[in-house]
Structure formats: C-alpha cells, structure tokens
Image 1 (cartoon, rainbow, N blue to C red):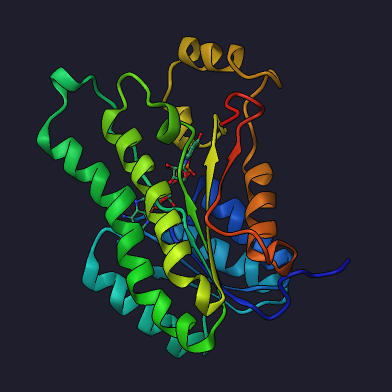
Image 2 (cartoon, rainbow, N blue to C red; image 1 turned 60 degrees about the vertical axis):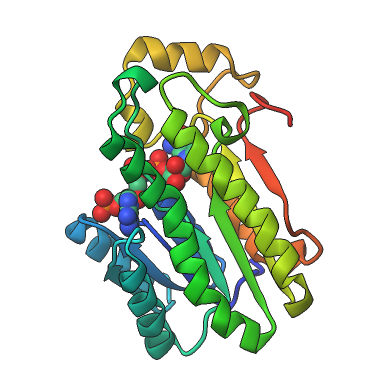
Length: 250
Ligand code: NAP
C-alpha cells in the first residue's frame, strides 16, 4: 500500500473518541506520526497512543484544552520539541450544548463558541508559525453541515461552525503564498458519542433526510481528511467539503 503521509507530523485535537479517533488512526495508517489531544479521557487517549505506536509511527497524547489560548501555545511548543516539525493540523475538538434560544444560557453560548471556534484560532495562531517557516502545511478544520444551513436548537453550535468556515477561507487567502493549504470539512450525521445523545426519533428523522439513507461513519470522514492532508490535494485550498451522504449540496 502507498502510504500517502509517510513521515509527516500531524496534530489532531480531540482524538480520544469519535471522529478525531478515526482521523488519528487513518493518518497513522498513511504513515504520519501523530500528536493528538484530549480534554478528560486520559485512559482512552493512552490506549490510542499504544494502538498508533503499534502501527509503527511515533505517537503521543497530550492533555490540552483547545479552548485555552495558553494551553494551545504550550501544546504547539511541546509538539515541536517532541516531533521536530509540524506538517498537518486537524482541528477536530468540539462540543454541543443544544437548546432553543429562549432557554439558552450565556454559559451555553460561550462554552460552545470557545470550544468550537476560539479553539481553532488558538491552535492555528501558534501552529502556522512553524509552517510558514517551512513554507509548507495543511490545516483541516471540522465544521458541520449546520454551519451552512443552521438548525433549530443549535444556534450556538451552528454559529460556531459557520465561523469555522469563514476562518478557514480567510486563512487560505492569508497563507496560500506560503504554500499552506487550509480546508474545512462539514460532516452531516456521523455515528459518534456526540450524536449518540440524540433520542431515537430524532436520529430516525435525520436518516430520512439523508439521500444515502444512513448515518456516516468516522472512517468515511477520516478518508476525506487524509486526502486533504496529502499531496494529492495540492491544489485544494479554501474549500469546505460536505461529507453528509448527499443531505446538503452547497
Ligand atoms: P465526540 O464524540 O463528542 O468527541 C469529541 C472529542 O473532542 C473528544 O475526544 C473530546 O475529548 C474532545 N474535546 C472536546 N472539547 C475539547 C477541548 N476543549 N480540547 C480538547 N479536546 C476536546 O465528538 P465527534 O462527534 O467525534 O465530533 C468531532 C468533531 O466533528 C466536532 O468538532 C464536531 O462538532 C464535528 N461534527 C460531528 C458530527 C457528528 O455527526 N458526530 C457532525 C458534524 C460535525 P474528551 O474525550 O477528553 O472529552
């Protein structure tokens, strides 16, 4: 098998579970060395570290809250000290605190914006410096289809994910001259703990709205991330790609 990311160094935020875990495994299978973060799932993170090392790559888990500016700065310093350079950044960490606007608290708004949007700023702000020096890099940010369409009960989440798309497009324009590509992915309904919180009736409604008739898997999202991270996507930047079974086409 051709390993598309042989000896690249990738950082994935929030890889202890769900989509981030799938992305970390896929990038390692493609030959990348993996730095990844988690917030509280220390045991799961350690298990993943061992699993990645068994694939023959260097791997290290970092407890680091992506919503915290100083922790993000320290994280990038540690990754550079441990791995030597940084080629790929996947901003995956994210949360939901769903509520209709009338009932949404200021804390629920702030928490989602800090974890989903400020986190992307925090990590990129520090990660682009070594990439600019190296004149090379690929950044992939996890948005969501609701960042394009909006969703009742998710005004905080949808706004954060719309912000991720605009941030991504802006970085692509700022950093293209340094050979740094920046893209976003907008997953639809993917089976993880995040969507596992939905009740069965809501999940069934989602499935009905998906032309492919089913939820997506973390592996299906990870495939697209691996492509965008690789040289095969060398002329793709400033895009947001839906990975949603046809649910949304723009
Ligand atoms: P998940 O199963 O809830 O996992 C979230 C991951 O992010 C966990 O590893 C968690 O770490 C980590 N995390 C959360 N906040 C963090 C922080 N501040 N700093 C560092 N790590 C943090 O979520 P998921 O479904 O895989 O979603 C992953 C990304 O895809 C999110 O950005 C989400 O918005 C986006 N997305 C998901 C779907 C979907 O259908 N699942 C659809 C569209 C977009 P701990 O385990 O330590 O808590």
